[in-house]
Amino acid sequence: MVNEEEPAYPQDEELDEQEAVTGEPPEDPTPEELLVKERDRYLRLAAEFDNYRKRTERDMAEFKRRAADHVLLSVLDVVDNLDRALETSDTCDVKDLVTGLTAIRNQMGTLLEREAISPIDAVGEEFDPFLMEAMMRMPSDDVEEGRVVSELLKGYQTPEQVLRPSKVVVSSGPKADTER
Image (cartoon, rainbow, N blue to C red; front, top):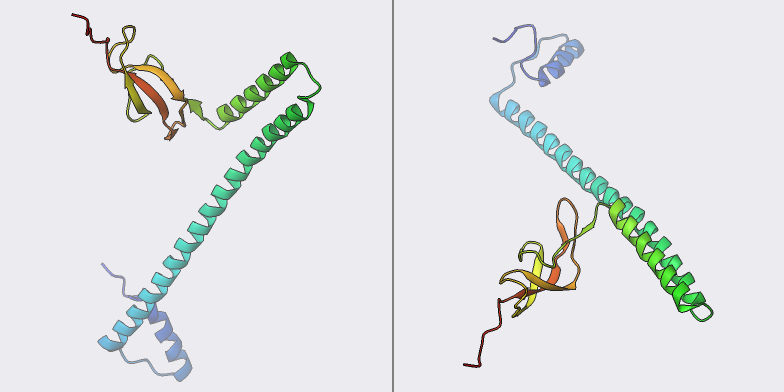
């Protein structure tokens, strides 16, 4: 039920202002005038929504850029350590170089873990086309058909998606005997 004291339309407040200026009550707006006012209101609302959408897209792009900057800064630390290892590679023992490279690999592993990126375990697992890409099939007496024999390239995933599928070799089952 509509309360008669409340204006039915926001533009009724504008009409009250007209009465205050002229001293006469305004005439009821014609349907055409109401239609024009409602069209203007609709256009303003559509423009406000468009501005909101654009602002949201800009904010999301800025958020993604800042998130990428955070990860890239961490990667730069790893690059710095690789540069240091290369600078000393001529003067250091091979064991020391391997120890340094292992430490850098561990640093990169920590970075991936912090970003919730984990390797996909593939070898010995049943082939999963959502996590793996079969590069070839190979007969194997040791590994049953449809299971991964070896991994050519390690895959990585986040809890939400596969970043890169594992590139694998899949068993086609035991070798066929051709000596009969």
